[in-house]
Image (cartoon, rainbow, N blue to C red):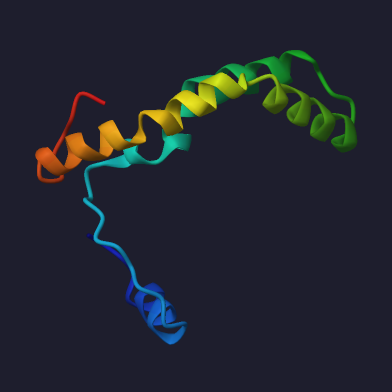
Length: 96
């Protein structure tokens, strides 16, 4: 695990425990699995050709809302399976 000393000191100062986290397992974070969805939404926002910042913000919010709740729920639902796979691989690569 690589964590900046300043960050670790901040956690210690706040009396927060930090979990051990394998360095090669980014897929444990559900948002990482939404990358394709977010890329698609980014393209959709650009195609809508906003004329000002307020309109751009509105388009982003609308596209974010278009990501199906079921997609997010599935990522959370499969978390225990992905976590078990990383533990079994001792922090190494998994099929997830």
